[in-house]
Length: 121
Image 1 (cartoon, rainbow, N blue to C red):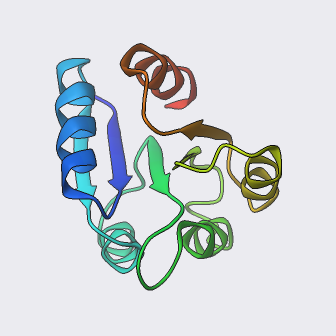
Image 2 (image 1 turned 90 degrees about the vertical axis):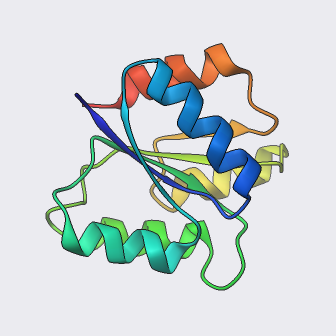
């Protein structure tokens, strides 16, 4: 079973994503901020994919992405950014920071499942 790490500060979003991806057959680990996500990554095997919110209190998803990409054991882990910002510049900047894909909120459930399935390895 493929493991997906979800780093999302909004509880309702965490619950929705967890339920959706669990139902699709993924093992889902949820953390509420970048610090908790980083702590999980330091103490576990790399996940098959990281679903990463960009705007969070404290360290942003972009900051966490740069840390992840700097680690040899995590550098190839796919990262799907998620954000309510839908401007082309926001998407461009997030992908330049090391993301593989950018998904806008609110999620279309089927699109989210398809993107996670496509990138998780």
